[in-house]
Length: 356
Image 1: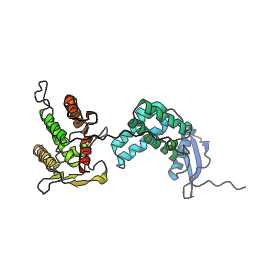
Image 2: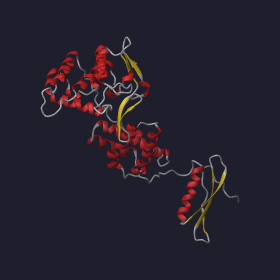
Image 3: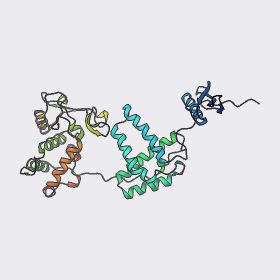
Image 4: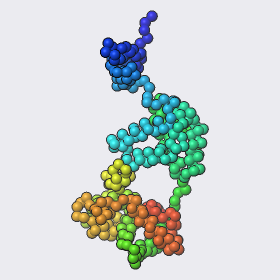
């Protein structure tokens, strides 16, 4: 009876023998994905090391065999391998570092503490649903939604590695959506807020006065153009042309902050397809001119720079705005401003409502 042929992409039986020197020699045959037969050999100090070397050689010839995960692997094992793959994508540029760090933080702080030890073959639809419901009860809607997305990506990786037959997260009930913020600013409120910012801590005696001017200029540019805070802080001298009629402002970058790269300017907006040229209205154009007067002469100079010349980070601008809101909370409430929804995004919503 003929010996069964080794299937394409598979490794045959590994035969191990002991050499006169006492070392172990492993031999085997494998077929690549095209069906060609390859003879493999490895010599090592131990039998297991020789077998591992043979399997490594076979893996280089095909996509067959088993993956790094198995049904008995845990979610923690899958997270470790999946994050390694995601990190490689971030390094190659096919994924942004902020996205990678967001995935890593959710996996480390939200998913692993609750289900890291669960084996993949025990991860049913019902169990996934209970895990996510518990996150929803203990955390927030946004964290539960993000955890669902990340857990689905992890399970998708396990499916592709042949450790799971299907992705159980796909059939889990969807998390509720976060209530949409709808508050905006009226013209009267905007004018009054500008005056409050101009007078903010003007008589402060316990240190230098906060940079109120940067708050006002950022507000007026965002109100006039509806660009995001990161895109606003990412504006450079070379991105604006105030000599044309009307003036033009090119949005082609944004300020981001990552653990790997720190605070830096990414040479594309939040979404690459959103590169655009805008004709700012007079209020925003005046704010741009003020920023140009303060900026360095270098064409690459940031319009919103710190004392060291680096771009102001989004978190620092938002921290400054929160300090202003905390100090002037009573006056803002009396003015009719929804202080709980007062973030930089309120400026974008305001322009959209006015235009519509």
